[in-house]
Image (cartoon, rainbow, N blue to C red; front, side, top):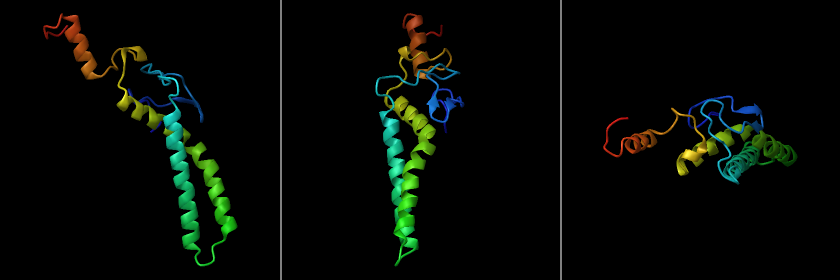
Length: 136
């Protein structure tokens, strides 16, 4: 959806392929670890390969028994270039959500107060009242 997985803020991209370093609303740092974006590249490549295979299969199957292979090949080449570029912002934000599910927020992620997970807030409350279970 091209939104922050923590707060739902949109407008995370300064240009189509230039993402802000952190969420303007909650402050989530998008590059949480080195190599953060390898997963988004993988998603993008899988979507592009799927598009290319679909163009090839549909192009050949709808024109069988005499498929125009030059036209089908050009269509597949266009899909191989256009789809990764068009899908880029979605692959980035989708990977952010997947990464957040695999590695939940840490106190070092720089998320602004009010956007912590409920379990984190409960733990903070227990820690602040000495573990007696009373709300701080």
